[in-house]
Amino acid sequence: MSTAVPADLTYPFAATPAPGEMLDVAPGVKWQRMPLPFSLNHINLWALEDGDGWTLVDTGMKTPQTAATWEAILAGPLAARPVRRVICTHMHPDHVGMAGWLTRRFNCPFWMTRLEYVTCRMLVADTGREAPADAVRFYRAAGWSSADLERYKARFGEFGNMVYALPDSFHRVSDRDELTIGRYRWRAVIGRGHSPEHLCLYCPELRVLISGDQVLPKITSNVSVFPTEPDADPLSDWLASLAAIRAAVPDDVCVLPAHNEPFRGLHARIDQLIDGHERSLHRLRQELSEPRCATDVFSLLFRRPVSEGNLQMATGEALAHLNCLIRRGQVTCEEDPAGVTIYRTCPRAD
Ligand SMILES: [Zn+2]
Image (tube, rainbow, N blue to C red; front, side, top):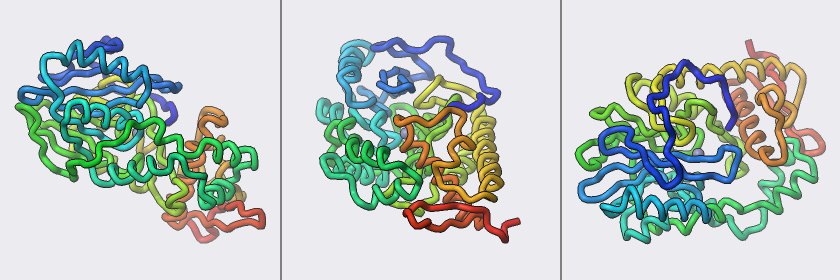
């Protein structure tokens, strides 16, 4: 994820919840924050009143700090009722990390979209494996050095360490499903590109959108190509799903995002996100009149320097832009003798 110039948005809540506390953000909707051990140091989670219990949306990453914060929340603001259901917007560890811990503790069901659930099971299963040759070849083709590749091999499989044993079954949520949660009906709105089948929840009556990582006010969500599907075009998916969400959800909602603060100005923010990517694609296409590999285009796409810590994310995001331009017929690529993929503007592109 990278920082971007914030759109003209408003933030209706002056304070953010302290660890172990919750703030009411709409009737029956509570906001809490969990710590994250990254430069992005928090995730927002939501508890919805659901009859005599709670439905939780997203769960935090599996860390001792998150478990301690959950203990405080469960003994404090949520103590009066049991957790009846856990919903996760998508499979990333900061969202799904404690789902299994919560569902086992309360013996309650887990709700997710199918692609998020099965992809998460796949990634967790990589923990303990050796880095696959396909993946090493993929990052070498992107321009990584031997030292970068060795670090990747040493780190491979860390995903599973950030996720408590997943619930062994799930209730499938599909696009446009209506979920009754307490007194309100919430509509499933699916996004793609940041993760395969990301769930947002829109409540027309409350005029609230729980947006997960699909629409964030101050940072742009990572959109990456991964070694399991080198030709994927997640950026086209991302742009199309942002446009679809803009059409499906009115502008006057209060957006509850997974990072930063609740905000108003959904359509302006979506327009800005789409516009930012289109401008990057335009610059990239011009830059590729000179042949370059994926790691050569970082300075064009990112304001901040790319370090060891964010090399994989930056590479995935650069490849997402390159694959999108290939899909649009504006860029072509070929492998050089060292196995590095070199991209250039199509001579026939207008
Ligand atoms: Zn995410």
